[in-house]
Image (cartoon, rainbow, N blue to C red; front, side, top):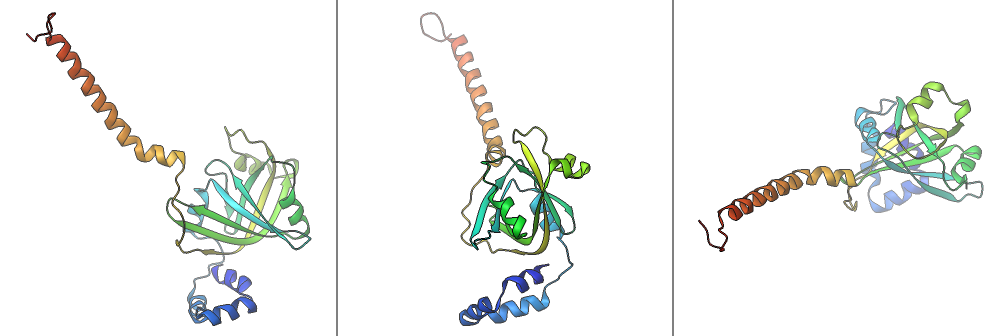
Length: 216
């Protein structure tokens, strides 16, 4: 699928610019040697399963691209098959730009970011939105997150036709609250231990101090 990503996006105009910059030959060699199993591999599946947000790009009938942020609890983006991703489409501002765009042109692109590990995965494919009433019951149970306040309006299916990993350059490190809490948990525990020890030593000191302020 990586090879197909390059075949679809490395258009003649793109290849001309690559040739001018001197990168065309390297991409040709990479395409010839790329393993192309026809589906998402385990690294891609694990990366998607850990995501709590992504960016979705579609193209409108006016020809203008539209990029939208989609987020939810970790795991709301589900790998449903070797080349199919699904997610719950939560109620938003009721503009329906992405939904309207794919009704006329189902081509879409997804960019998934992991800022903490400086990684990003790009996917191209076909996107479809399905009303909850028309969705498969098993998919409704699997894709609708429990204990999440967002209201699900429909389910989305993304059939992957290609993907590629971006280099880590220029990705600014950012961390979620859960990641920060996990990283600082040992420090907070150590602070509690030190505070408890300090409080105990103060108690001993007060017990040894006489009424006149001297120590026994």
